[in-house]
Image (cartoon, rainbow, N blue to C red; front, side):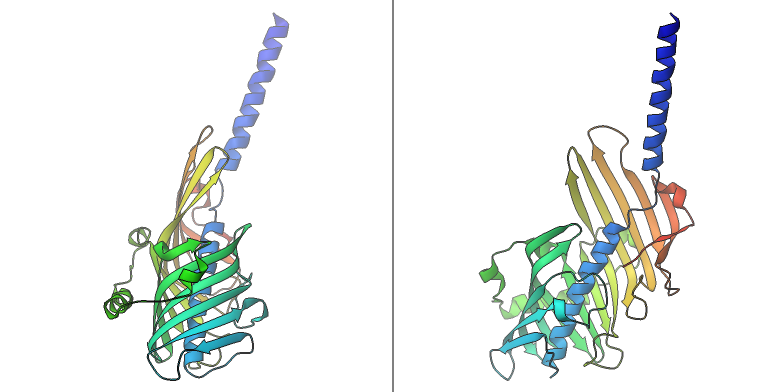
Length: 306
């Protein structure tokens, strides 16, 4: 009898230790890698549009090859940007080896772009080809507006099809109309946006791209499947500014992260965190509000390094 009681006590202690360990792993700081990955991706797309606009304004760069259908407008262009030899994109790490930009231009300030990234880095994975279709871009003085719909992103697309833009006048006007859509001002509205708006400030110089600022608003989601679990990360960014003035973290804006995890066993992954960025440049973000598995981080500063 004593042996049985001893065995039950050992088993109970073991279960309690395991449960405490699971709880300790469960309650944690927000999983910011989802937001960082999104900010990297959207900023890199904005940078590609920024480069294309600079070239059409008469600038030239040693790491970019340009082919143009004709000297006037309308015209089409092909630009191949070597990102491994590019000092103008200040965020780290480099997202791809190269990006091919196909542009349909009605004038020097208005374009529809297709992008094809080579060896695109997505978290711990490398995607051989990543394509983004029909991105509308407009320049207004020192400012550039870009709209990126997540539905237009494809993994390993048909390369030949992507490297061509055949749009009617009505289709071009429809794409450009997306730039006039109202930007969400609330993270809970933006989380269902499935699109990102990128506003680029050239800081008074179109031929110097390394000091430009990128302001991002919008939302979307990622789905990550591993073993018997599925995790959905819903994200929203409101006026999140990435600038060369601080390469550690965004210098302004708010971000929302909502995790919904579906597991075959164990605790359900549920958590929401609202973050705020500042120009203190400490490589951190402030957790304004947190619930679920992130609740212990309420009011704290957490690591957020770009």
